Length: 206
Image (cartoon, rainbow, N blue to C red; front, side, top):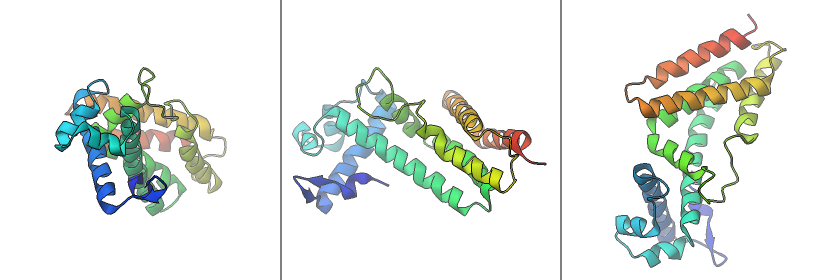
């Protein structure tokens, strides 16, 4: 969920009004980036969309990069909360892997505006100072841990390389989401099911 509720200003917790205003700016930033890209996202455009002055935006966010980082963190928070809840509800480790796949694809396919925020925020040409990178280990470690748990219960074969499989699944998810962005008729849910079937066939113990 949004980190604004935990933010501080000058060493003091934000007031409810400040939290609400920051959340408004973050939400508008997500919309503006989705419509105009990073280059078309400016503090003035955010201010105009909110019906306030640019100075009002700067009161909460010192720069465009800071605002984009906040928008990125909001998008990631919503994604991880959604997928995490599905994984926790899974009946077992193998089901948790499948919940991860279906949840990630389902959420991103349903929120193309969030996908563009992620893509634009992590673009090397944009100086957002976000440490996450498309190829960073953090992208596959959580899924690899789920795969390891499935191996421990023998739902998956013990010889499955969890890192390799996690990276492969991540790459497949990226490709499927890219396709869904290009083709509005693309059935992301069916694609997620197909990927789950591939994982079952390649990693399943039976």
